[in-house]
Image 1: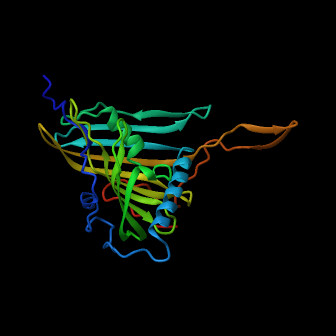
Image 2: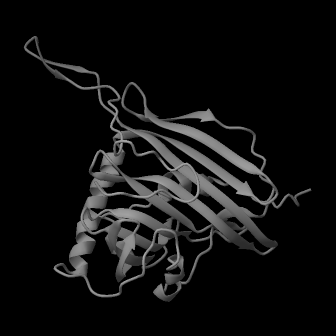
Image 3: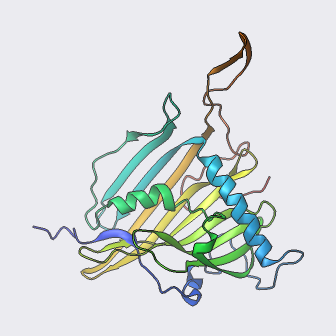
Length: 291
């Protein structure tokens, strides 16, 4: 039989590419969010904010490629099924990125099937990055300013200008720290849905970041609590992704010049986040105190 809901694939629902439907991604009563102030920013233009955070995002993307971390993925359905995967994102002796699965119990999901696109989204798009290279692909709308816990942020709604074949995009809302000009929170969907043949739908997610090494806002916690509307019926799913134990990768290669040792790197020198700050463990999501 194929009635194990094999046609129900985990993914996000594509919304029309208009900002009026993006706004519901950020409700005023969400935990940690203050009232939305729709006034224009003072002392800086909207375009300048966009350019600043896009430049910082490019730096963040390049910096994260030099770190290792642990990724803990948990997906749950209403039938008490669960998908769990704990992976260490590392480098091998040659400096090549590798993934080491440290815990993977048997998948017991009943209502949904994890697809390649789901796993790609978890790895590459739940920690959404909007760099200066990607800005031309998106419509970006300034919607105001908002207090996110004790961080003052600029808020933007974004959506792809067009959907190109075989490409995936983010559509939703981002919160940008008004001092560091880095994204500290993201809420939205990865689009488009894949509806030809078997349905492949994607849920709405929220990703929070924390400051690492006093300068980079790295993703630490992603939460999903959404209902996917399949043709065969609705399916409610929950998902939590934790990113912990960030460490900057270094080389232990000794550097010599004319027989003299002129320096060496530190192998796997640990670069933890804010002193005493623990990664989020459960709902509700963590606070984000600014250093």
